Amino acid sequence: MKIHRSLVQAVIETLQHIFVAGVYADKAVEQVLKQNLRWGSRDRRFIAETTYEMVRWWRYISTSLSPSTNTQDKLGEGISISHYYRLFATFQILKGFDLPDWEEFLDIDKEQILKNAEQAKQTRKYRESIPDWLDELASKELGNDVWEKEAHELNKEAQVVLRVNTLKILPEKLKNLFDEKNLNVESFTNTSPLWGEIKRGAFILSKRQNLHQLDEYKQGLFEIQDASSQLIAPYLQLEPGMTVIDACAGAGGKSLHIAAMMKNKGKIFSMDVGERKLIELKKRADRAGVSIIKTQLINDNTINTFKNTADRLLLDVPCSGLGVIRRNPDAKWKLNLEFINQIKITQQYIISTYSQMLKPGGIMVYATCSILPSENQDQVEVFLKSQKNNFEFISDRKVLPSEGFDGFYMAAIKRKR
Image (tube, rainbow, N blue to C red; front, side, top):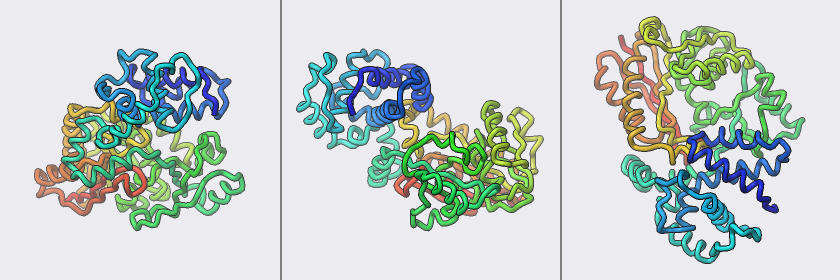
């Protein structure tokens, strides 16, 4: 593909949005693509894919260009436009592509970049493009061998997984609709027993496309939801007619899955501290044909109002998001130890206080999209020690990125009294 200057400028502008302005990568790409509607699908794909890959491999690229420059702390602010061009050139060389004969690339030493890259590969934090603090923390918590494998897996492109909305259509019928339109959607082929309970109703997108424009999506026949996330609802041991609280519901992907598993019978209270997310949840519920969800903006009275009311309680708590870095690669450059330490305080507060909404005999699931034991098993252990007379551990499940999809953790806990 011939590289046009306008496309490279668009990539650089998007990188500046991400690293300097702090915009999330998906929003930054969306903003830039909206600026020029004349770009064709190929150009738009080049901008999006190049941006994501450069963000993912930012430290490896920077080190390959200049090993003496520590760019993990100087991510974007203060970097000149000419240096962005050199970083782009380095990325192209590492991919094996030739550079156009532009003035910005005249001082690029291809052989030196390739030599630097080989040297960088000898050290994991450069090879896998990871900040120092994250490499040290994850290695300490997971063990060096496990982290070596997971760090590599987190740099792979995330698969797009669909969940069939069984309230409206059977999986086989939806697959037939996809096949009739020659859409690039495949049946779930991962043979691990881990995915046995969801694989019949999950499909994999084999070639990226705009799913939101499909009639099947607009009709609410499917949702976009990673396979690991789809394990959460079954872990609640749901039955139609139950009262369920999804206390950190966000935009409601898991609430919708819960509703489908309950056959749209019972009550679901989907709660969050963000009103915008709950507004989006209502729209999604309407599209999915779900009538049992009621949204609740969390306030100072929420816990008391719903005390002892839930048969099932889902606490998908705020976390570092380290298990989903494949789809949010900019997160590893925006996170820091201070944030993780603070979010662990929030997690313990949520499980300790929100658990009051569960009935005696009810089951709650504590979940994160992190792979760090300090956010997962350790938090559950702290809670159970403080509540040993009232709650008991049932089981937990750790899903690592190397198992094929997002990293997740879930623990089922029963209230005794």
